[in-house]
Length: 114
Length: 110
Image (cartoon, rainbow over all chains, first blue to last red; front, top):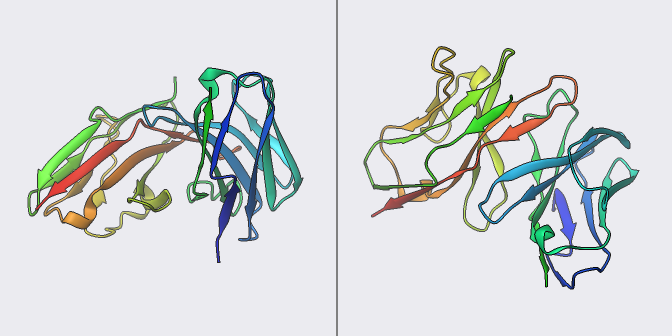
């Protein structure tokens, strides 16, 4: 059983388009995260939700909007895509905020903006 | 500022040699530090936490508050240790935010 899944795995799109990446976890965790990994493999937190409530919102352009319809899902919508948005986006979950040290990561979505 | 620094992008050693992956942090509070690992074609996963003081797959890491370091060590590297290693700092007990270092690729040659 896949614990944290993301779709799609690869996404190639043109500048200016709007796209979404979906994330689902079947671990019964309360907290979910979105990370961006740039070309230098630097992994940076973007957002975190706990029981559908936004708790971490880093300095991210407002073209990025996370949405959590329920605690098992955390989607990432990106408007007006730019070249600099090209990266690998990872979703993760943890049992709760206290146990955030043990995060379960998804396989990543490689976004390429042309 | 809260920061995690891994100075080496790539560390290459021969099988059986000792390994030390460096990690330095900057944090004003009481730090909680962790090592994550990503093996080829696998997901990023927690390797060990400083608070448990455990050895996982032969790896240990000691928190040195004086030097603000949390280096990962193994006395004898194995080929299966080849992976990307990330050091992480728990920056907030309220939000659970983790700050990751830049990562170090460990390559163990036969």
